[in-house]
Length: 169
Image (cartoon, rainbow, N blue to C red; front, side, top):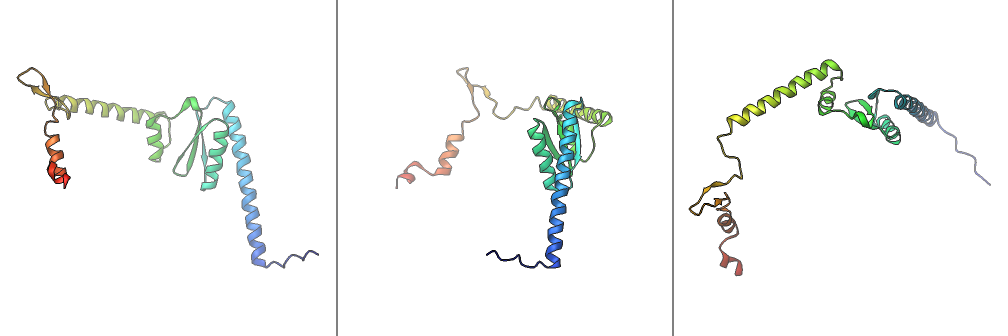
């Protein structure tokens, strides 16, 4: 015959109740995410944001988005789901990683920042144009052939490995 279930203590009952509440809350969260993502797929928005309180909620958002053919990224405690045709730019990813939202004002700010960086790089290129780049060739030798700057590499390798007859011992 089956033994009767052992009597549970009040503490065990409370733990079981908490586990059920957590499980029910997780199910409710998944249902709401499924509904929101379903609506998101049908409309013309480029992204949708979710506040994920813990890792399990982020994973739920990520799994549901992946099954719907969407891309989800995590920025701090915020999970953002994008449609594949509206993947975020590098500026948007950087802004979100810095804790900023993404809107037209912030987009203009990052566009100006990018323009300044490009202008600064061009300025640096023109000022460094007189300096030879690494790996450039040396002036032509007597035969008119360009000599690579790797002339001393063989000697350096021999110095590191030791003389050739030291290896034979």
